Length: 307
Image (cartoon, rainbow, N blue to C red):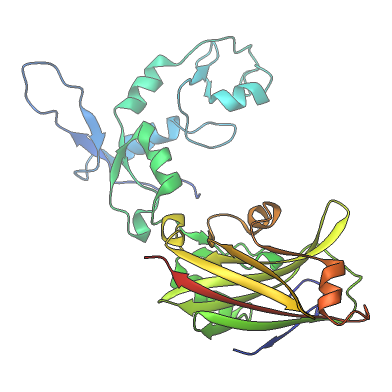
């Protein structure tokens, strides 16, 4: 439900810390030229020493993994480039001036590491060089999704089935089967426009889940209502679908056709990009009957799969 209780009534007509890894030395293949050995995930010996190496590559200030340039003070204390700026070039351990000393030895050690994706427990079994791991994890298909129920600032993450069950059980979101919808949104005092006054409905269509959002907010000083669709999955999958929305009354209507946005894009990002059906309040009140006493909007729409 929206913050502040029943502001709207709807009538329906239709990245975690790195884990400990089992790490060992992978023997370099024999060749005519020298090959650097890689530290990887093959056997179970040498675990404690490699965990120690991994700890050395964690910035003591922010706790994140360090990537070149890795800086050090004259006493050998290291930290990442971002934190070097944050501590005003003063070593947080011994307070010596950091200068511009690079820890080349630690950078070389990092080059020899091969580590599993942090989403290994969720199904990703790939192993990456240390410097490629972060980029992969930012786009890993096993990376969990954030809960799309933005009104409660919900911190739950998970795969799509987990989030669908969570939305139904915890947020009491209405779930509907079908690719067409006909919703009526009612608000007793339409002159109150609040950011994050919104509603969410989930549709099961083509075996996928789509989130229909309806919100009241302001663009500059202008109060508006907005309806838009998000896809519960990756953007590459979302682009396979299109949707259309329509609202109107008294011989007039507004229509919108677009592509649903992935829930990888935050609720606020989609709203602020105005990627959806936007209804100025004055026009919404006209569609509602013109007396300005109550908002009564009927939003119809459909979802279809592009060939």
